[in-house]
Image (cartoon, rainbow, N blue to C red; front, side):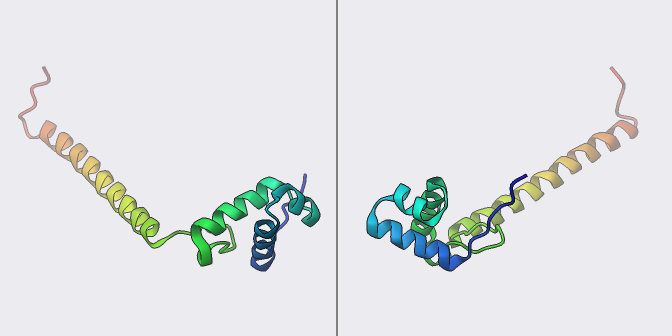
Length: 103
């Protein structure tokens, strides 16, 4: 099994700058010993996140708005889960209070 190679932030930034200066991704990638797809991904990440790109440890770089969206999605998911639990509880208690006829 192949071992994954890890590149530090400086190497990635240097590779992106070099590829932009030469405007030839496949050639630069070959010279650096990496796949051109990886260099293209680094270029996209650098363009999208600028200083926040290449955070390391596999953590995705997020803009402030993306962090806020992720926080709100988590809060929504928790509220939906709580609502579903309460719906089930109401259903269980309403069966046991004598109002349920079984028809």
